[in-house]
Every structure is written in structure tokens, then in C-alpha cells.
Image 1 (tube, rainbow, N blue to C red):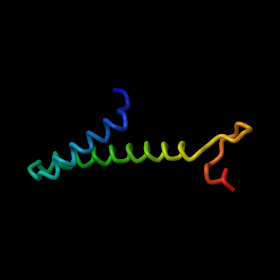
Image 2: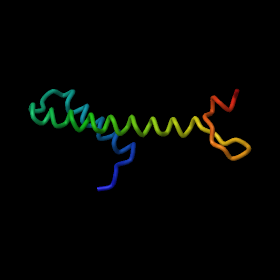
Image 3: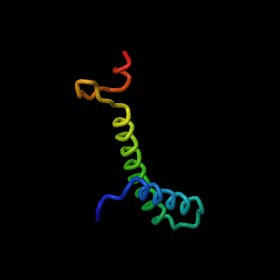
Image 4: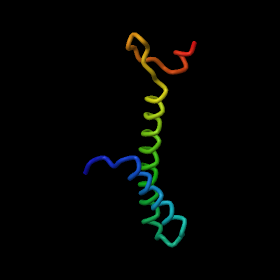
Length: 73
């Protein structure tokens, strides 16, 4: 299976949280869901972190990539 998109991972994570918040999930299923939720949470965090890094870079007139804050100095 291909890697899910950020939106798909977030939606699945939200479904897991909702199911666990209801409190009527058997313990073994809750543990499995929690573990899957942790994996999805890390994937979402990594995706957001990579997006942030990409958005904070810009190109100089010489076509060199620099961190946005450094370009202002």
C-alpha cells in the first residue's frame, strides 16, 4: 500500500482518538489502536516539520537556497 497523505493520516488518527475517547474498546484493541495512533502522530509531525523547513527557505538572486531568517540579515 502506498504511503497515506497527511490528510488521510490525520483523519485516521482522529477516528482512533474518537474511538478511544468513547471508552468502550476492549483493552487489547485499545492498545493496538493507541500504538497505531502514535505511528500516525509521528508521521503527521514529520510531514509538518518537513513542510515548515521547506517554507522557511528562499532562493537568493544567485539561485542559492537559504533559510528565510538568514536572508533578512
